[in-house]
Amino acid sequence: MRKTIKFLSGECWYGGAVDLGEKYPVFAGDDLFIDTTENPTHSQLNPVFLSDKGRYIWLENGGSVHFNKGKIIINAPEIDFVKAGKTLKQAACAAAQKHYPPSGETPDKTAFSVPQYCSWTVFLWSQNQQKILDYARSIVKNGFKPGILIIDDTWQKDYGVWEFNPAYFPDPKAMMQELKSLGFKVSLWMCPYISPDSPKAAEYAPWIFDHISAGRVITNEKGAPRFASWWEGYSAQLDFVSSPAAKQWINENALRLIEDYGVFGFKMDGGDAEYFESDYKYKNAQSTLWIDSIDYGVKEARCLYKLANKPIIYRLNDKKHVWKSTPKGELGLSSLIPCILTQGLVGYVFGCPDMVGGGLACDFIDKSGLDDELIVRWCQASALLPMVQFSLDVWNIKKNRIAEICKKTMDLREKLTPYIVEKLTEAGKSGVPAVRYLEYEYPSSGYKGITDEFMLGEKYLVAPVLEKGADKRKVVFPAGKWKDILSGEVYFGGVSEVSAPIDKLPVFEKIG
Image (tube, rainbow, N blue to C red; front, side, top):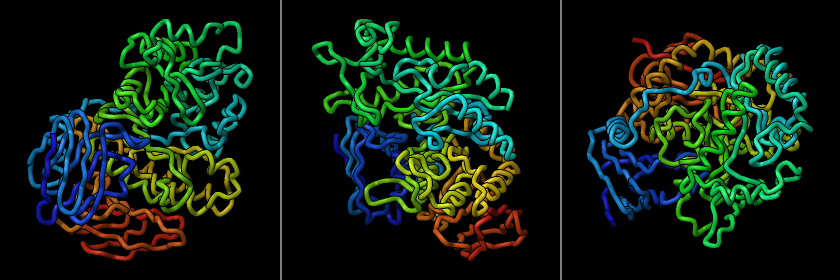
């Protein structure tokens, strides 16, 4: 089916591909093509497009959308085009209620009441028991609040062998007990891949053949596994579309980890559409069913499709340690707020930014080149988003006041935590995001293109510094009276330049 829609006068559109957040809103003169037939990104995708004039497009079975010279050209099996109201908020709420209604639930509130910590960039492929314990102890020792601690890739014996590697974790039960005593809830990294050569010990002898005969992996017409080429090489993939046995098997592993070690949840990585063979027809479905497959514990997920308004921690794709996103498509600090705003708008309301400072392994192999100012500003930009996730041990970095400023920033978040929890609890019931575009909260006020500041609920305006070397920034204030929560200075509707030294996150409370 093909349909062409004309832009209304002054209309702009927002879309459902979260990684494209910096490209929104789309104006009549812009040219942007998105194919939702399979997720072209490494973050969340919801096949919905929303207009600030109250219109929306929903593609139930995917399809392509081309914004071009004032027209929207759609090719899709099914097209739901609706005039739902007059504003962006009305369009978003109507689309959610019809196509992805709120579940009424939230993830465990630990996820947003205290910071999260992930062992990835600090240890990369060298995870071990002693490092994890030292990491956790240093968090508490330096005055940061314990929260969810994610033990990342290489804790396991192999991909698909979900047991602690005894060479690096000689006594995981003792480790888990100490982490719990320190106040942490531990999640483990998992993926939907099976290493074909993992039976390095006799106990796993017929490994891949067992999975094939049980129907747990995706196979070709000859019955051989389809191997995914992903960031850790070549692996077979669990088949959640065709095989209930795959879901049963991964659930048995998850439940065993919970019962044996007291695991709190799982960081569910991988499953990206890009890693399936080109002729495979069920890429989006596999990504979705992988995230749906585990029925136990708190789930953090990155790449998924049509799973909006679920009690899932929706993590953004790994960001590069740069201020501005690169022409090659590597997303930097500049993408953080636009992507979180897009997440919330299209129903992924429990948004988790990437780790403070970024999450691409290549930037953390040699940490001597990290930008101290960027780390601090990244922490501030993340501080009042639905969640904050650290990996780099900023609390141990005393130079250039990194530890001091990051601690000060987390103290600010702690003061606003009750409000953040309140707004996220409401989001689970209403689908209205906690973090909002100014246009969402103040329609038809000339705020369409503003994506470097945001509303936290109805009460706070947050304007992080995103430019290197800046100690002030221009802030667009909606009509009314706004008080700087740190200095007490009052601003009124319009554009004002505000002071923002390196240790300050500009936050303003609406008065009256």
